[in-house]
Image (cartoon, rainbow, N blue to C red; front, side, top):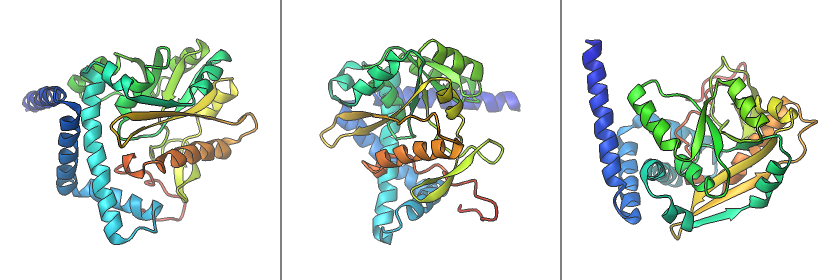
Length: 297
């Protein structure tokens, strides 16, 4: 029975990957249209994720009317759908057309961080164009690494390794020795610490859009060894291109865990405000609550 189930999973992944590869051959406007349509369909049928997104919108944007909030939720799903198509482009397409439309803010901060020779903590968020953001960053940076959670399904993990491996090295987020080794070699290591990993992981509560959010301050230990924190964001532009922004940090040598976590959330919040519907609000960012507070979801 298990073998049959695995075979069905393999067929489903093979079908999905083949279909995505075909869609990614479409002209970019058509591909993004397909992504938006897929996102709207997902919003219709994925009631649990829509509920999470609606709850996050209510918490983080309390001034929205009911009508505005529902429109915002739909836009979030549309952007997530476009992000799926952009993932396919990041994994399989020629990068040159995307690099040609790229606007970069703050490259001098990356150059300054690398000149210190202690490694760079590239700190980003879960924007909907996440994988394409890696491809865009590859245009201006030397070979870099990113931490990630290996997928449980090997067939999909193989595709992920091959796709992302075109422009980055991958390090299991639990491989602390591998992360420190990369930083000691003055490599850039990309982190996305804006998800709630649950109560079993070390965290402090730092505000995100005014709501206490469980935030892992573990990157502070790497910064204290000399690695330079640098934040990154990337957004779609109305004209069809992309903007990548690099944001420097102040001296963090005197920061405690809470101050470090608050800085991470503050920068991500500021960048999300540039295009709020391009952030992955479908994640349960406020899953873990301070003692005495009930669940928000």
